[in-house]
Image 1 (cartoon, one colour):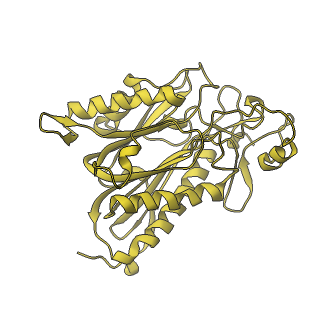
Image 2 (image 1 turned 135 degrees about the horizontal axis):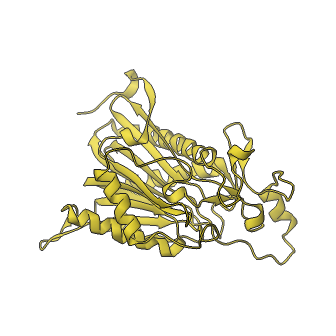
Length: 331
């Protein structure tokens, strides 16, 4: 059945109220790192677009439209840099225990994709492990109360921004979310904001980024230009990682295109973005339970990009000071 979207109101919803997706986090505040899981019991059509020059990712090649696997069962966003990819194994183990996965004849193999951001410079220089990933997946499916929160939780626990001058000038960031419903259509976004650059609100005002010794904002772009002829060891651990979720019917190729378009949200809210020291990554997952008009794709892309922008801003504004690193709320 084809749905006409023109007669429905637009309303914001909680990302945890999205149908077909199970979302939760687990974290260790002493170690300042964590895991966020977005899971699909029945499997979701999915793809990814990686734009940053320094990604830490898992199982992204299989998301190319030409490759065999047509559905995945979870996206894992985590801290810990490449070490944090271990958390995806815990998610995989939990899903397997619930008989969730791709049927290979002799059993089911959960398809779990992931991306990790660099938060090793804060806390106890630790990372999410297999146990933390398992706990996040358990929380998604079995916890009695909502286990997804914004700010210093999950993959956003140790997230920071404004790191061109190293740890002295950076600010605390976090994980954010936003979701919208139009009739039966649902589109949501989750983003763990850990950029090298600065983050800006919808009015163009900087809300987090590179700071001077006296607590004033510095422009990362301007600082980079001023240092172009100087030998500088740029802080290399960054990355903004996100996931778009929807129930609209999309092909794997359309998911790939949607992920590509949604990088516009990064470009609008983060400057500079997609640098060689960022691993900027966007996943798209769809349960495919709602068929819309064939011409609705671009409208969905507009909606998804807007929700991702809101999630980025929310991730920054929800963050709290930790280990002496200032946040938006401290300003």
